[in-house]
Length: 246
Ligand code: SF4
Image 1 (tube, protein in one colour):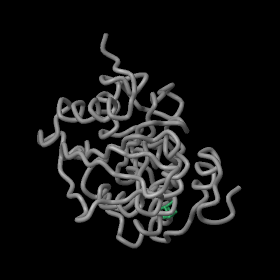
Image 2 (cartoon, rainbow, N blue to C red):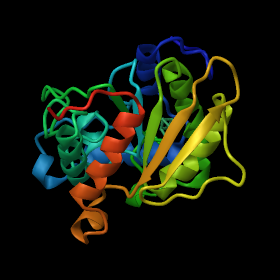
Image 3 (cartoon, rainbow, N blue to C red):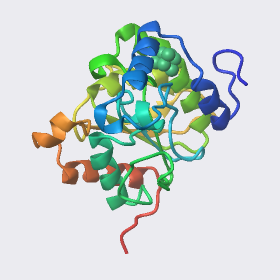
Image 4 (cartoon, helix red, strand yellow):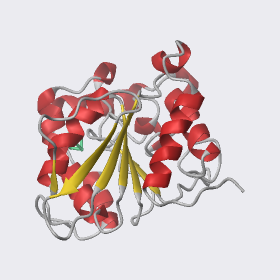
């Protein structure tokens, strides 16, 4: 058990410790209320109702950074990007470019494996209206910093899903051993930034931006599967992951 910030020694320890976090009173109340009241379509399910840990191998070369778990997605299933519309789009695209073992992410026991890739979020509890406060983002940053430190031996590229995640990631990178360019790089779909290490035990990182695969972005066509797959495939190549095409 890690007893204080920054002392988790393994990803497994970090994931286990995270699920007991109650540092944000508003989010604790909301995630538990949603888990009690449930959506009618899931009324016979036991909601997770706790912080949702990252998902994927502990030696990932590529990290996806989203926003926060969805109330009836990750907060229900207990797994990042699982059981909601964003997951339907994201996992299908990840499967198309060789980053996921199957095209669907429905439940924690559905057999999905991420290939060389891990998914996390700057805020690990579902927020009302999908909008964490700046204080909640800052409260949760130490979990992301710990994750970046533990992944650093293998991590070579990051894809950030949306501008909110981009803003949250930059200070976490700075705290975990990388130098953020000045002026701070701006978010945009398709943006790529190379981030240099600030210490000898870190490697350069390729950081990519894409619009978030939210229902609003995908229904309106602001983000198409082809757009998302292009960013994911470019990031996978930058991370040194194998090209799945024959
Ligand atoms: S959002 Fe993060 S810091 Fe806040 S209660 Fe959840 S896990 Fe803890």
